[in-house]
Length: 183
Image (cartoon, rainbow, N blue to C red; front, top):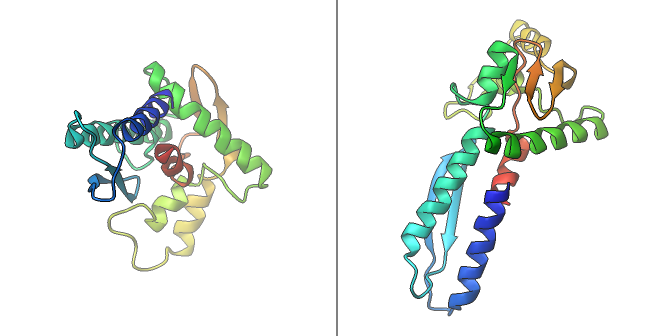
């Protein structure tokens, strides 16, 4: 989160320091992350290499997005789902993921479950973040199995050491991760 604040602050300073004119053309760098198109647009600033700045910003978003991505086979949430426990590997993981997950769970409580970060089995079943979404609805047995592995009450522990869930629980922060990365 701290990295993102520095990036946004630096970007704003670059814009303010260089000044902008109507003839300036935005430089864009983009990618497909967390199931959506991400674009970073930067105005050229005298003395700066705009393509490099955009590439650096996009790389930072990619790194942080990888930590929040529920669909990465090698990611935090895939390992948590299969093992039931995930211990923070490095400080930036905890600094980014922990507050997002804590706020997501708080919102789940405030919304009486209307929002739930532990519905990853269902979002995966429906193919919501997939490049190849389902063409037909899942059947009753598939839904029943996914529901049995879903729900915020399956999250047992979240703290500064790591995460613990009932095995098979799939966390999906996609609903909030995009906003976090945009911030």
